[in-house]
Length: 75
Image (cartoon, rainbow, N blue to C red; front, top):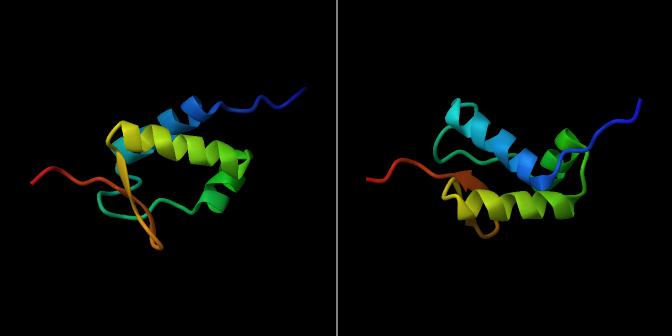
């Protein structure tokens, strides 16, 4: 049986659900692009698209040289 690969939208939805569940708390770093690519068995280019979707949804923010972090509640 062939393994079905997830689309970048499905991966973004999964990570968004993990954020909502508290697996990735506010202001904590998401795993690196390479770690996420390995976790979901996709290319790093796919994870780049996932990060754009998450940023567009207002769920994450990037810090140059540090990584991608989960947005916190607005203060």
